[in-house]
Image (cartoon, rainbow, N blue to C red; front, side, top):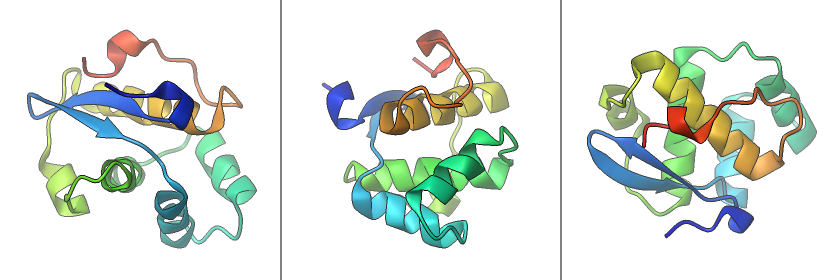
Length: 115
């Protein structure tokens, strides 16, 4: 069971329920991937609402690895979820909300998170 207070979310990818969390290590991975110098820079980048498909792959990959799953970004890129691209965007938004709160992250319902 996921613990939302620790920033964990659950998402259905490839017909399997996964836990994702942006641990401090996962956040550091994202800072490096997106060339951000701080968590504030990282949050600003995500708040711009201009995430590409590659951004979502990187974000979800870091979240999956943060929860202890041994998956590469290439494996994440091949995964499927309910709702297609919109489903992936909803999962990414849910993960960001769980990590940073509701600060400037678009408000999606949990229904769209691929459950």
